[in-house]
Amino acid sequence: MIEKSGLKYTKYPYYDPENRGLNFKGMIECLSNAPRGSIILLQSCAHNPTGVDPTKDQWREIASVVAKNELVPFFDSTYSGFASGDLENDNFPIRLFYEAGLQMIVAQSFSKTLGLYGERIGSVHFVTKSDDVAARIKTQLMYIQYCNK
Image (cartoon, rainbow, N blue to C red):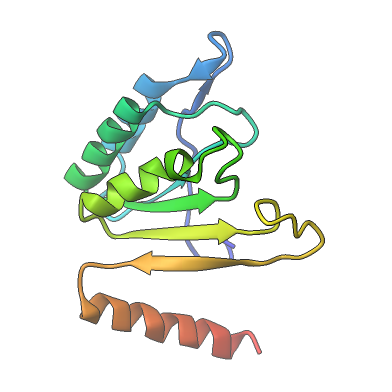
């Protein structure tokens, strides 16, 4: 989808196989150097395929870098409730970014969390700072829908 949209992407360091944990330093360094306006794909919990998630303090630092560098977080929220057994805890990063006033995109899949394995069901949310931004997003989504018929 990214390439078809004419966008380019790069991968950021995430997993450190030597320590079997998060490469937090590498991740922060990469995010700190990302161009303003870059969309950053983040999994809110139960990172697939590593199973390694940032701590709450690390999420706070990630949110700070995202805000400082005006990045756009795109949360993949597929496994809410699976990491800790607690929806509130597993959605901590999304609430944290929201409370920080960050614009973001949140994609939710309900295929696994609602036991609808044979179905592709979910939602996408655009959290914006203004009605103007929301209207522009709506226009683009309507265009995409129209062009794909």
